[in-house]
Length: 449
Image 1 (cartoon, rainbow, N blue to C red):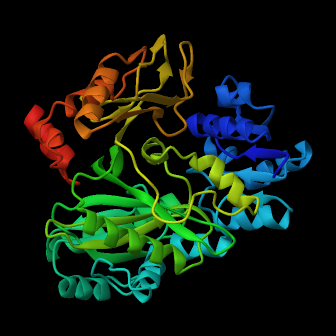
Image 2: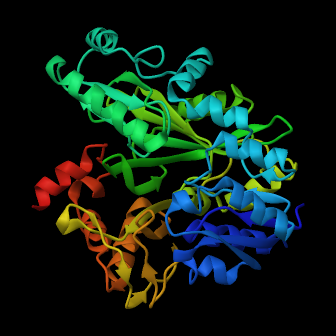
């Protein structure tokens, strides 16, 4: 096991990794930008190194500075968390060449899944169903227009690199295609430095269901069940739950087996997530694989009792998966609500600033992962996530009620947040009945306006 690990991230995930390392008796090194000098991950890590100016491009995305921080502090491993450099194959390679263990998959595995068009073909070859679409990237507009007609409208134009909904457009008819094609390519180039796009048929009102997978260096790969992430806005998840209200035991078995095949196809090592779209007829299709720990990993932890971050570190150290053979037991129902520093009344505009009051809820089955506190100033330079509220219950109904009560007793003053908006979702009839899909937010806003 490692003696010292550097955390190449910030916010709640950095704190989450600090806690896991303490339980494993591993010393921690935090890195921070000038904007994060008063952050809790800096305070609670054993050591901390400033790596640059506030903007991520000048600090958290500076691989050379992170490697230098690891070398001067004597760290043996680097945990990238999620976002920033977590799915950057070049960074994983630099870690390896610097004799640092990257807590995650190999650079080749990151590349295999990082290019979404290549990933689709890899999955197709492995017998994992994929959404009908182009065989790879498409750069010529005339060729793309011809393919779109063959695939059938509406068609999705998607960036091959990155994620988070950037570089993604939906063309509803032929006349709108050129504009959306150019827009997707331009946004992808600006966000990821890669303007490559591919085409997929746009499924009508699908559910977004993902499976948590894990692999070790000894060749064992398994899944830890699903999370339903259908409630999302502009392809950014707002609410996640497990188990999915939409899956029968048979469908869960088939999707789980497909997720494992997907990971086995590239010899996957570490924590990953295989994401599917599920249509109303029960057909499911692979859309992408995230080669990192997910924001919503606590949902799986709540229903399995497992610590996924500690498992990541153990696997990176060469240990076999600690999970027993066979399907893992799941208990009860868990829901995660993402608390963002955003103003729903102003089209979810970011709301950075000083938090004057912060009171988090508690009670049975309630967990809050956060890095903020009363007196903390939310900087304008990073993702707006300030907390994750995770609730567990013996049944979905109990989890929903606990979630509602927790949201209604969650107090954040000084900035605008999504707390009230999420509380209203817990009273929505569609949500209460588990009848949701990726268009839920638009319909919910129409109903509540």
